[in-house]
Length: 212
Image 1: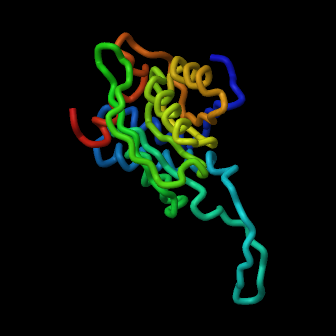
Image 2 (image 1 turned 135 degrees about the vertical axis):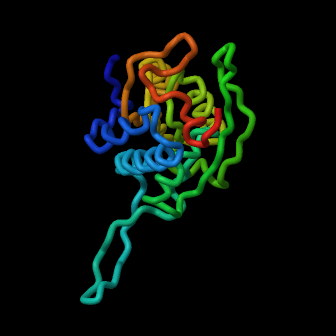
């Protein structure tokens, strides 16, 4: 796959270690859910590096000091339901004041096209850095539709975070939304005929919530 300036593959030994756990078909629902959150925390650390900041004065026990902090009300997290919910708490660990919206989409198993069924976003989201999250970037259809929806709501600074990505999905997001920063912890080989990522980890939503 070509390299793109807006696509970031987060190659880190801790992330690789945790991805090995969630790939394993024998990993329990509890452990899978926990590790998904841990990977999201590690990814968000990198994605947050250019969020809006401001300088404040802090009084220590010895003196005052000028300190840089993240601007209040500057971040929103938007999971693509339902699997994206598994990443939210991990990101909130780093910035618990972030507002959280939700975009509901499901994949038509015949056409593989995304279908929107729900959207609830924080007030003033157009002025925030939006972290759009979904563990899997497969065909890229859901990601592109969700990004387009956010742009219609006036969002100008969108970052998309996926734990596992396929080249097809990365190419599609880059092609349709080259202004969006894409963060992927692992880039897998390809999609199969059913639109699942290979080698992948199966259905992330089912494994997070213990459903089939």
